Image (cartoon, rainbow, N blue to C red; front, side, top):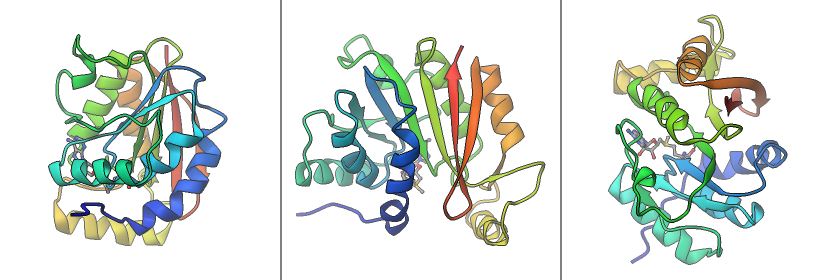
Length: 206
Ligand SMILES: C[S@@+](CC[C@H](N)C(=O)[O-])C[C@H]1O[C@@H](n2cnc3c(N)ncnc32)[C@H](O)[C@@H]1O
């Protein structure tokens, strides 16, 4: 049985994301992907980032199965098996003494914090603050509001839909995200505008 899931937006955004990422990734260590979703980002990025290793993760069991099957379909020797990771956990599985792929020198997360409770942003920043070494990088991709305002009418419409799913979901204010980062010793280096009214934020651990 093929358990691969297909996310059309992921297929559309993976090239522009990679173009932005490639110059900013560290040269050694492991990139931990939080909320790997279908796994289509992982199989696309991993072969391009060698000698870095790529560690996919997810919270949802069916999506872990999707990543597993994508990995079997498009193997890369630096693409690790997915781990089950709830970003709101106080200790992530990659912090266990038995985890073999340290150091984690970068974290990549796309399209999670708006489509989940705000606690996922808090958990992401707390975890990145705990596990990244000085100079380690966090990449955060998705739609954002600036000064409480949407950057496009389509994002405003998208947010109404998100709130119909759960009132705790929503396009996040970049100021609140940056505050959470700074609480965890993560310095905001830049925000790069991306297609379809998204941004890629780059943070570095002090
Ligand atoms: C819209 S999908 C994005 C998937 C993928 N990153 C992408 O861009 O295609 C949102 C993801 O957030 C994950 N997620 C939600 N809450 C989470 C949590 N507490 N810990 C880890 N992942 C979570 C979901 O399982 C889902 O994979």
